[in-house]
Amino acid sequence: MSFILDNSRIFLNAFTKYSVNTPLRIAHFLAQLAHESGNFTRMVENLNYTPKGLLSTSPFNSRLTIAEAQKYGRTADHKANQQMIANIGYANKNGNGNIASGDGWRYRGRGFIQLTGKANYEAYKRYSGHDVVGNPDLLFQTAIAVDSAAWFFAIYKKLNPLADANLMTAITIKVNGKTNGLDDRIKKFKHYAAQNISVELLKKKAKPLPNFSSVRTYAWNWLTPYKYKNT
Image (cartoon, rainbow, N blue to C red; front, side, top):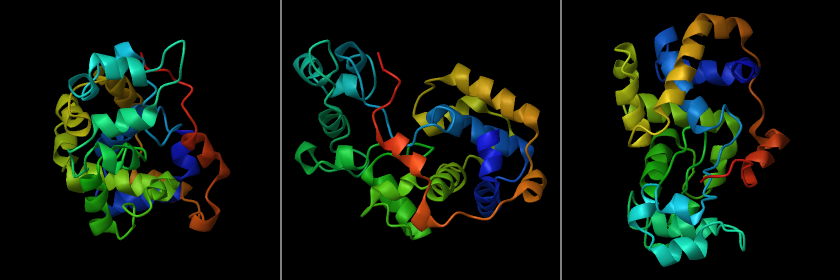
């Protein structure tokens, strides 16, 4: 909750712009973001998989061979080659080029909603004007990370009506592609629903927007390898 209040103006602008404007919609939106971003602590996809993790996690389990999983996954002998994992796992899908294009790594998950794939980056650029295609790291700026997430939630995936109907599983499938982490998303939803966060509350707490040229220095924490280790 403190992160939301610390960035109340940013969230208020996004909620107003994308009609995420009831406590129920806000709770569902924040629950998805909190899960995808580790409670707003990271803005880039963690690809630090072990070979076992690669062979049991979609889409990598259908795209990497056993030999490739052993070669690129994290073992006691070497670090994970996250760039190759992304380039193989995301090649030729969602607007990305082939493995050699590097699009898988270039357009890996970023921002609080983990926007992934060149096609999604291009769609958000067309809508917002932010050139996240030419400069994907724009999604590390808090204001753009929140705006892109609200766009993805309300415009791209049209989840406001599902939030109104309180359909957590359906929302999760739209965001994640499957129901990964559903229990945690439900837990986070209950937390934010109990906070009863409203547009009116954020108006009272609203703070001036930060200058994009002086983005918080702790954004570097989101550019470094995760403390979390996938299995």
